[in-house]
Length: 445
Image (cartoon, rainbow, N blue to C red; front, side):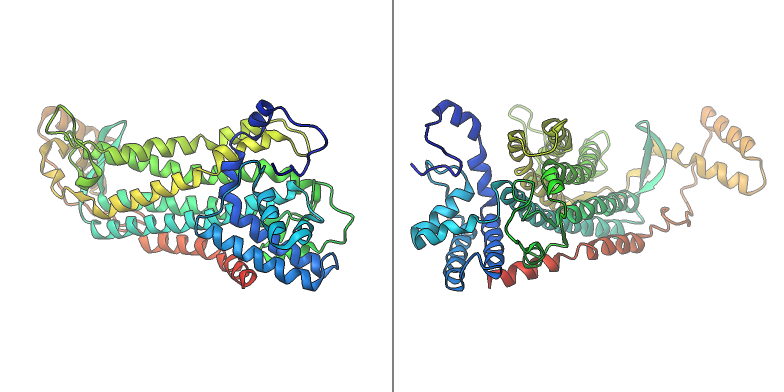
């Protein structure tokens, strides 16, 4: 069995070891290639300050690139008896290069190493989520433009209220995602700061060049104060979780609308048949299972900030093992959110709408405000016009004028989709993902 980095001259009780390690080895597989990237930057810096010789740096980088490639192919494994990803990488290096492989840990702690891994992993995940949000946004804008002239009832209190349109409905969720993207950008910018060199939270007596590792890894800046760098563990996950929850909230609301509008009582939309399932007993059923699962998964993701906060709540300054548990709820959440975004974009693209909803006279009352406004525009005081139309509805004599003319910004006749698209593009451009991707590409050679 390989020795633990922290192991002294006694054997840990196996049950205690099982309990303390928990799911950490499984979670570390999410971080493996980022651990390698961080080590590549770290040893490049160590060579620059004389803690590694030039003839040691080249073979170490070569082997780390080999390990990175195995991670990319999905072949990397943490062997039985090896504690974590950091130990596995070091073990693989020492097998190939002997004692030279043990030098990569100089000037860092597992504390700043895992902090770095988490940040490198998270910024990539945020980039992928931002791209997936943009894909869904584009589908919603496209549908909004295609169907901008197709009217549907709008609701308050689940009662028919005023005329709306599919252009408004799809466009509303697009603009919601544009706001969600601001949260994602803020989370990315807070994530994209370098903690490496903070060691166990109190720095190092080695003359580390933290600016160099910041540039090598394409960070926007570093977490300057070494104590704050360690305080950032948990805080980063909480902030990112809030951003993910904002996106998930939009998806959950859209999913609920779609399930409602797909039901026979509404009949406003028809979901793609491959996204519905039947019943084992009722041959007529086409249940909106995919959107129901999107709703449930999105609601689960909206609980993520609370889970992270409860784990890290009231911890004083410094590292505590409690923080290990955050990985179990945080790391898998990205794949779940990306799945929901992919499925939603697919359904929106394939969704069909009922262009004749308002042919049914039951929806005539939604045009009552239009009539009140017409009378008011003709000089009748608003309250008198309101009473006159109300009495005609009660008497059953109201006749709806379905010709509507909404021209103000953001209304049925003036969706402002071009401005919403400009807002989204401005936020996307503000991420500057190319700094990260260019730096990593250069580091990997």
